[in-house]
Image (cartoon, rainbow, N blue to C red):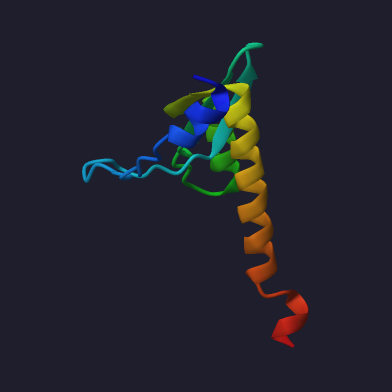
Length: 109
């Protein structure tokens, strides 16, 4: 069977997108993209700021003692180069669409 015949005989099966009810949305404050050569690894992190109280001098002392904050990985996704290109294209399209829909500063006057 030729490729053209196989393509003509192919049947598209719809996808039913399911998001589990117990899946908790998380806010990613940081992310890392790694390229291994044959795949992309996208790691998303959440950094919760520490509670710093007191007057400005006390706050500064607490921050100096802190040293660092923890970034907890909340999701890690692996994509092929082809799917990564599609992902980037979709992100760009949706970002452009949102940018066009946002009111500009001149609209508020």
